[in-house]
Structures are given as structure tokens and as C-alpha cells.
Image (tube, rainbow, N blue to C red; front, side, top):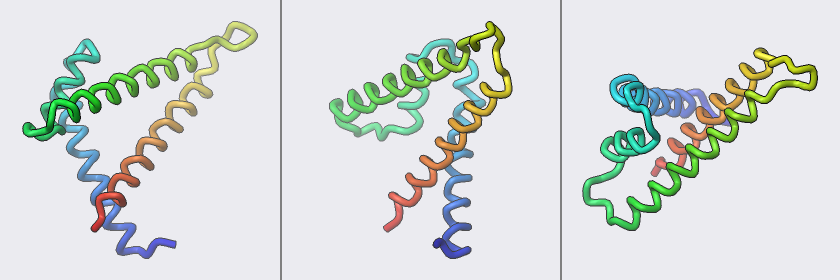
Length: 115
């Protein structure tokens, strides 16, 4: 079990990461109309300028693979039920589950970054 101080530190770091991502998202990604544009924004904000080309290429592949996976999930959410109706509550629950998964991922990144 995690002590309160460690949990507070993790929450602060997650908030910092979310803040950086939110700043990028609100300022630039909202204007983007293609995955390529979002990739370029992400790469400029998150990849070191001195990153070797192979690292940049692998990161780009992973980024696009993640975008394709997300698109596939969103398409599956939009499938109509057997009676032809869309279940908005179920779709909302699935999106919330994805949000929680991403928050957990961010927390894991913070823990990995610990000395």
C-alpha cells in the first residue's frame, strides 16, 4: 500500500504531465485536422531535438499505431445495438474507462521516472 506522501507526489506529477499535455492540446491540437499535424505538434513538444532519427522514426510508428488503435475503438463504440439503437450511456462508460486507463498509464510513467 502506498503512503500518503508518495501518493500526493504522484498526483502532483500526474497533474504536471496533464497540464503540459492540456496546454499543448488546447493551444495547438484543437486546431489540427490530421494525425500528421498532431504528430508534428507532439514531436516538437516532447522529443529532444538531438533524438537520433531511428528513435524519432520508432516514436512516430508508435504514435500512428496508437492513433489507429484509438480510431478502431471509437468506431466500435459507434456500432448500433441489435435493435438498431445507440446506447449513449454505454458509449460514455467506455470513453470514461479509456480516460481512466490513460490516467493509470500517466501514473505508471511517473513511477518509472522515479530514481
